[in-house]
Structure formats: C-alpha cells, structure tokens
Image (cartoon, rainbow, N blue to C red; front, side, top):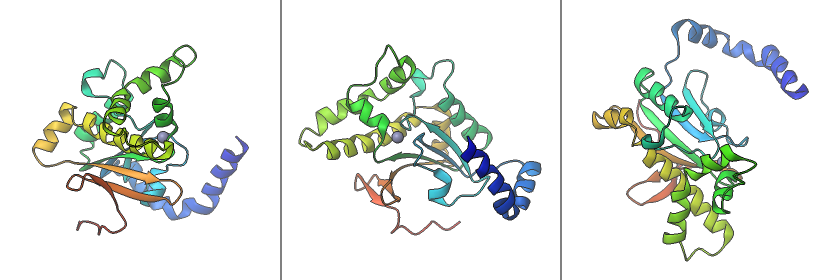
Length: 216
Ligand SMILES: [Zn+2]
C-alpha cells in the first residue's frame, strides 16, 4: 500500500501538470475512446503503456485470461459483455482489440486441467469458458510436444477464440455489418514487449512493428 500511495503523490507532483488540461477537458466534454481494448489482468500487460495511449483513448477490459464469453452464455452478470455493449453502442468505438499475451497463467492453468472447483469455484467456472481452446490444441496441435510451444499455441488460440466469441454479440455483429467497426486479435510478448497482430490471410500473428499506421 505504501508504494501505491507514494506513486499517487509522485503522479500529482511530477506528472499531473502535463495532463492537467487533458483531464480538465475530458471531465467536461466526456470520453470518446477510439478503441475497446480487451486484455488479461496480468500485471505485466499494460494496455496504455504498450500502445502509448493517453487518458480518454482506450476503453479497457482486463479479466483473467482475456476471455470473451460468447453471447449465448452471457448470463445475468457478465461484466465483459456489459463493457462490450457500452463501448460499441454508447461510446461507438471504431475498433476492438483482443490482446492475449505470453506466459499467461490463465492459459497455463486451463491447459493443466483447470483449478480446484472446490477452493476456486468462480475461477474454475470462468476458465471453463475457454475449454474449447484446450480441445483445439489437443486436436489440431498433437505435433507440438514441447511445453513452451504448446502453451504459445494455446495462448494464441485463446486470443482467436475470444475474437470469435466477441463476434457472437449482436451489437458487434450489427456494427461489423455496416462497416463502422473493426475487430483485431493482438498478442503481446512480455520479454521483448513486442506486439503482433493476427493476419487472417497468413493465419499467423505478424509483428506490428513493420506495419505502418493507417492514415487517420
Ligand atoms: Zn494472462
């Protein structure tokens, strides 16, 4: 807690000055984020840092394993589905990024057979949402025998599965159909802080470094 409070003081004293006007403007004019960014709760994956975004730029959902439950299992209290509806229908973001990452504890737990239903009932049921990923790895990647390779494939497939589930939500479908929304699967490699984007043509995650930004 000490570290957090020190950080708050440091932000107020050393950094807030450069953001004063921006926060002031955002407080009166409201937010207009361009992108809904869905990523893992992992403490090493910082959406704003790795995309150099500023306050007001990203509407961020962080959850264990960057899982997007499909619309059919949204249930009564699904915070990810709630955020998707708000970002897509009210904030009218133009893009949604689902960003998976390397060394993901949630994916590792999923591949290891899940967590204890008895002691961690919520987490266990949450990870069950990604069970199809484990089946895909077992079926499609039997040639991957090394643990690291298998986990990387699972982390990538988990990201694509989330992207697929995202597109089961009616509000997303409607805006994809009229061409006003674009969805992307990204992958963050922790050790080198590199970002990769899934290319449907090559069916691979390709480095974003070589891609020039689209013209605004
Ligand atoms: Zn993770």
